[in-house]
Image 1 (cartoon, rainbow, N blue to C red):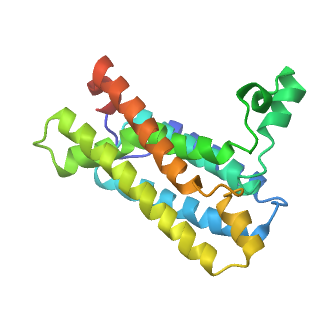
Image 2: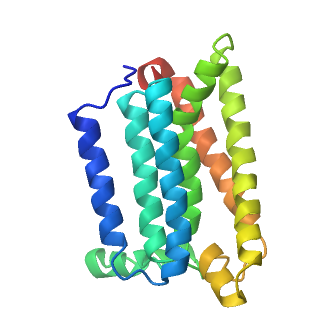
Image 3: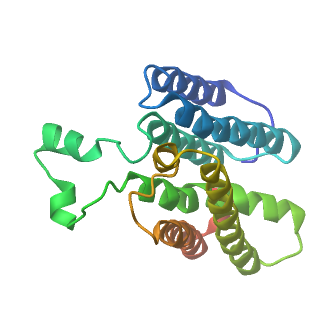
Length: 212
């Protein structure tokens, strides 16, 4: 059901998000890079509020959007490259994910880009559904995939532009490239694959229930 007025459940989610921001703001690994990342959080929240009021969203899309922001906030606190997900898994589940997968770098930034496609697909679909209401669902699906690809590219450009004005060390801390020359390409690919997974799943299972 499309809603354009905040209810208790919406305020609870937003309250949880604010609490996460407060906790993440306590002794982040590198304050200036943390602030740069959190500027993105603020801009995305503004976009969420505007779209929610102007065109309405269902709670499913709203929740996934907040979920993406929570993943991003954790990454911002640890500069993405230093999120100790593997240490947490070893400590609490005695499972070494990096060793099992053969990873030699911190993969949390990859998760965030993948989540961008997976979790924000319903939000983007709603935008195109309103703007281009005469189009068939499959056409909107293709447009959303292209939008995720294009917006991922623009993000990588912005990240590169910001990093150019920083010292080499600060730039590395901010963009989390970890010495991988193909970092931007793989990030964009994962976002695209993530959007395709959610889009195809909703097309097959009946997107009306999830998107309307």
